[in-house]
Every structure is written in C-alpha cells, then in structure tokens.
Image (cartoon, rainbow, N blue to C red; front, side):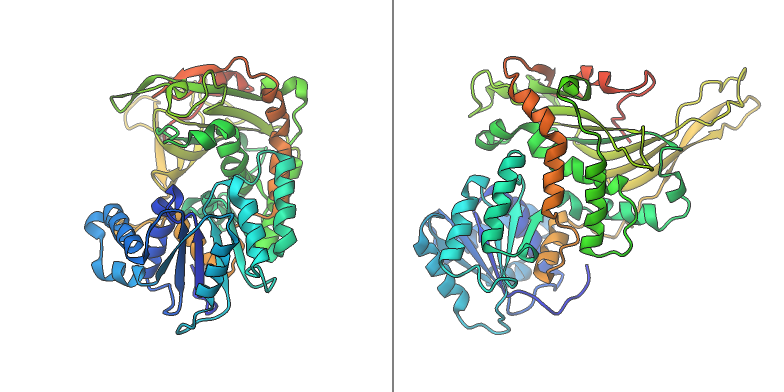
Length: 493
C-alpha cells in the first residue's frame, strides 16, 4: 500500500448492519485507523434499517471490534475510529433517506473535500433502488468524482450482468465504478505476479512445455451460514467459480503486462478469458460436475445436509460443490487443462493453486528403486497459510539409490509481520482511487461467457443432483474430469 495525498472524506456504507460490514469492512477500516492511514477529516456514514441512534451504533461497533480483535483490541484506536461515524436509519427505496444523507455529507468538517465513496454492502436485488436514488437526489454528481463500490455477484448470468452494467453507466462513469473481488486483494495473489514476473528462475517454466496441468481449489468447511435466501438461488458456480476462481485463473495464466497499471493488467486478464475454449452444449457433462453436501461430520461435529438447512427449498438441486475443466487456446497454454474446484462443508478450509510439472523427458532411473518418480509440484497457498512451495526430489543418505521429496518453502512473511486482510488493501485502494485490483466489466462479461453453457445445461436438468458427505473432499466422481489416469486432486500442501 502506498501513500497518496488524495482521500475522499466521506465513506458511506449501505447495509452497515449486515454480515459483510460487520465481519470485514468495519474491522478492516479500524485496522487502517490503527495504522494511521485514515486522514483526520475522513468521516463514515453507516446506513441501516435498524432503529438505532448514533450511540447505539457506536456501541455495536465497539462490541464487534472487541470480539474480533480480543487481546489485540486497542481502546484508544477504537474510540478514535467510532468517533468518525454517523448512523442513518432508513429504507433503501425511500428518497428521504438520500436527502438526509446529502445533508450529512454537506456538513462542514476539518480537512473535508468533495469526494464520496458509496459502498453497496447490500443484496444485489437492492442495487437498482440505491443507484437510482443516488442519482435522483443528486449524489451521483459530479460524474467522474464520486465512487461506487459493487460487491459480487455481478449479475446472475451474462444478461443480468449486462443489465447491471447499463444501470451503473446510466448514473456513473466507468472510472467511478469499483467492482470488488476480495481474492484479488490477498497478498499471495498479488505475490503471484511478483513470483512469476520478477524471477528468471520461474517464468521460463510457466508454459505448456513444462506444465502438465494446473489445479485451482477453494474449499470451505462452513455451510451456507443462514444465507439460504441468496445461496439457494446462486449456487457454487455463481458464488465462487465464476468470479473468485476465474480471477485466480487469469492471474496464473496471463501474459506479463507492458506496465503495472490498472488497464494494462486487466487487458491481459481479458485476453486469457477470451482464449478459453468454449464448451459445446453436448460436452458440458465432460467438462463440469456438480454436487450437494449431505449430512456428515466437520471436526467431530455432526452437521445437517444442505436440504435440511433453514430456508433451503425442499428438494433443492442447488450445487454446493462444482468442479470444472477449461482449456486456454493460446500459444502459452494450448493443451494444458485447468481444473477448478470449489465446495462447502469440505474436509478443510483451503485455497490454493497447484501446478504439476511434466515428468523429465528421459527416465534415467530405470531398473533402480526410484524407477517410479512422483511428479514435481509448485504450490501457491492462499489461505489459511500464505506460502509458495516447490517440491523437488533429492537422494536419501545411504548406499541405495532412494529419493525423498523435499519442499522449498518460499514463504515471504516473517514471524513478526502481521498478515493483512484482503479488504484492508482494497479499501485503501478505493479511497486512493487505484483501480488496479478491481474488475473491469469486460472481465465480468467474458467470465460469464465461459460458464454460460454450464449454467444453461444445469438449468434444464434440475431433477437430480449428486451428493457428497460433509467433511469430505467433495464428489469423488469429479476425478472423471482428468485427462490422464495419473492426474489426481491435490488436497494438501
């Protein structure tokens, strides 16, 4: 994160009492307060439906920060932080709320300037009301100055994504729109670009000549956490694969940009998405598989099946696990399969990129105890560990020709360095106006084009869905996606 003298001094959070704001936005903003990255004149305006006043809201913020940080809770930092807040109660469709908001923003403050950030931490179904009312009340003006932050999902399919984009552009310029995907703010994802492009050791290997296949996994032990109203309509493909995993794929596969600025970086990511081989309708079953978690055990605790979760429709066929195979038809990656997998109620919570290298062209160790050598891997762990590892073979000490695999750990964080939450990086970029780690609409559109055949095929087949036990690594039949018998899912570091 770099210093920047330009800050917006009003940061408006729609849906401030919701899950995202409580778990991510407010703690991350408080960490920025602790780091001294928020200027004196910056104010926060929290908007919610609860019948609270300022003091009730501030008590709520103190309580959630104390629970979040526990032993690291700093009373003085917390008080400085909550003093910045004003709470406004109202309904998102009520124009009176926006007039009240405009009056609050207009109040004179020390260090104040005219920039305003509108963070839509709300359900996608409420986007239209907020965006139109911001315009009606004059809060979207002047164009090119204020900023609007939109959380995923960006639509439900390509048509609704295009409709949302038209709505945003009716009232804001593209430079004002920040489409946020928190995976792009993770240190390991940003470090991936450094790992690739700043090391002559790595980049020559990063192509079809040396790489057998690539796996991208995002597994979670948690279920849907009382979000059935959203998740039962979205499913794992929309919730995770179309955005988070597809963004990871573009960072792994893209060409080096000519310069490290927002548009140059995103141009290269779009080229990857445009190069993904379209999946014919008749071949969807060979490229993607879905499943839903059944009852099982997580860390020794019995958990219910998805269909028994509160709010889930009876006989729902919504997928909680999806695995898919894609090919990128360009010079660098032609013929290399990319396997993407995500699921809830899995054996572990783990996000990683696993890159399997091709075997040596000549087997020098025939007729020795190491005739069968396991493949080399490069493992990029995103969470919970943040590390980059390369597995290589070495000879074991002794008289016989036996080998063992050792891991070269390129963990970049020192023991005394506190990890940043992805939202801390992204929120600071928003107030700086840096759009490098945010998504341009053509990225959204092409990602929808890639998964559209899968969505349409599954939409016409809602009578049956495979299940997998909660606490497992998902549907075992997903292994049929692999191109070769010696390819298997990499589950651990």
